[in-house]
Length: 270
Image 1 (tube, rainbow, N blue to C red):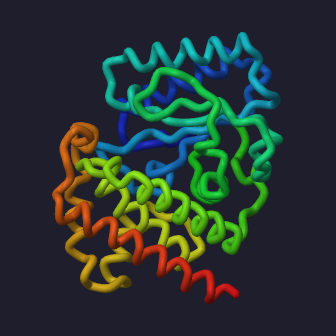
Image 2 (image 1 turned 60 degrees about the horizontal axis):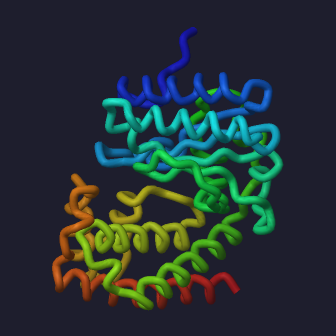
């Protein structure tokens, strides 16, 4: 029986086939598995989603392998395809992926819209491990739950609370960085999603988090959340456009509110 395609989008499926067959050819016996995660895995993708992938290798990629992977991502970025230009993912050694270890070497990572591989802990989180283990779509190789230890709800909540505080510190240290029509609604939807995770102990999508937040949080935030959802289309064209002044200030207030809410969840867990 022919396996079902990983997504309902033929063009994206073709890009993923190119990516994975090329990665397997480059890595040879060092290749273990590859997955689709993020919004495509949880089922809430849209035409502006990035394509979150993760490749597992037996051992850290050699310099030759890293150079070949770099050339691959540069080639993919030149394809006439939105999806090829919005691949985002990491190359994890199997032992590093098994469980979170802050002392491990940062995996090779390519950012959304980039053609350059760098070292980054962007995906080296409990959030990614949980989502991959629970919802990851296998593109090749072993099932993710055989390679990743279970992540407890309490550990997930702890990481989310820490992320909420860390992001807030960066935003309030330099608020103007959030003053555009991409970052401001992104912050609203991200904090909705993180509060939703604190509530459920599970990772959901930004749309699911926004839907929950609209009904569960104080009604004064409903309009801000709805407008953030409406800003989603063509988000990459909005990075140079300033945010609505009222929504910009309301977002700063909403982040403070979300932090207060996170502390109440932490207290409830004690």
